Length: 136
Image (cartoon, rainbow, N blue to C red; front, top):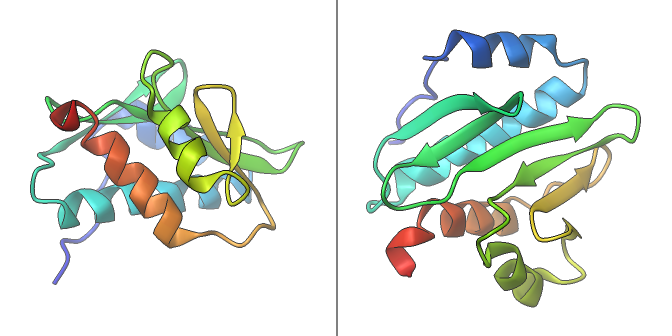
């Protein structure tokens, strides 16, 4: 049995999600849910801290991972997640998922609002981010 999704412990983050126009808010909430699902299924990942970084929801597993920030663009109908630019995580993901996922520089993975959401690939990306430092 998986743990229920937590409510928002950070008021600013909750307000940020409430400010997103549809369907961006729903897409980002789905990514948030994936982060908590993966964290719950990965024994080495401890509690997730949810905050705002640069105005975007950010998720960090202390001591084991690199932060994941969520963002999107209603006009371009895209959403996705970003990692710290000084990690090699996006380079690793490009090697494994080139052609299957859309990448942005050395920071991001993006999806179109109408794209099929590849949950297995995304869960793997999230797990790699949440365990980034424990694998170094």
